[in-house]
Length: 481
Image 1: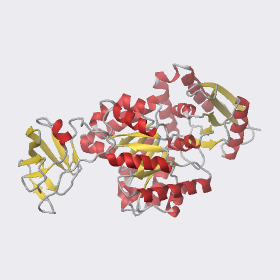
Image 2: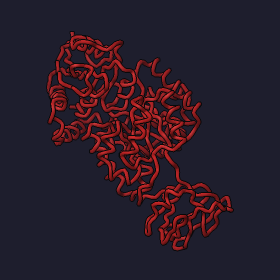
Image 3: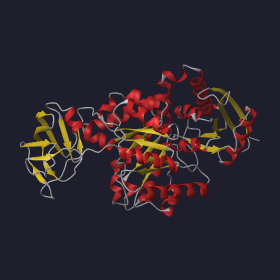
Image 4: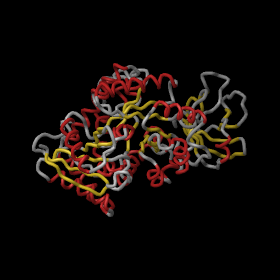
């Protein structure tokens, strides 16, 4: 069986907005070429620019009659060195000694200020300190409460305010800085659908964010710190979605381990039924070139084969010369993978090997939906009715190559489903009261979405009573008249 959903892919595309794409015309074109979710990066730009982009997205959404997700990505705490006497910086040579301290005086070839007491609080002999995206590596020889003497292991030019990473320890820092909290409230006021949480190290980081968000948006936890990997299961369970942030992860972990970690994280998310995004440098060369490398297209294809819910473009659409072409290329790679029978076989193997998917009523119903959808003649669509989205997520976990039409009375749920593999959303005008109502709406929307026609079968699933979240317990088959 081939995964075929007409003019939209099963694997979703997330596109980052920036100077190259912050206009109504470009956003509209990006959607036409396959974007399902837009990422607004609060590490750059200002709140008013982000607000204007949200307005553009909602305008495009209304005009095209589809639901588009918006992910507001928080910056997280940033660790940086101080300033140097020479504004061009200094050259550190392998084997030389270099001191980091809390003295605010300008630095030179022997020392520089590291204005972060939280780093000195967890300092230990032999730990690595990475500077400038890991291009410079220092090893701690000895230290005190406000200084560390280091040896340069990998040298290079170090200059003002270069970023610092400390991969060997868990820092006593919240994932949300004071700036992030201001931006978080602004993003929620804009009506974004998801909040990207950077610098996640421990489960408590997600709990803190959830206390602020209070259900107004999904939490997308970015796995980019080694400390997060030590709590991966708990972080996945507490989050609504996970992002494999390969950029920072590749700085703090040996780069050769990143592909293995990507597969592990995607596997664990799929097992838990949580959406997962694979991000960073997927088509990096398209920032400056109209065509990607062969390795980059293979990278995107591998994420699709793994069953990731979404793949993400960062600089390619934020600052690149060819944002629309980059999206069109990613869309083309996804279609290429999803059009071959082996793709469905790989997805099926995962589901069959997941022994936990049918050990309860909701899991058993979702498993049965997949089996019926792929074996019933003229099965055109699976329709879920879900006020919270839980039923849609449960069915999407099964990765059936029959499209899922998610019907919900909540527009925020409809937009969040834009991140979920294989799901198309429709919002009902009001909360449905009976399963007969659901059946009528399911048939209507399946035909309107051009997923089914006369004589086709649609499989409907929901939870009764409707108001009880996570109670998927009904399966019904309807033949479209």
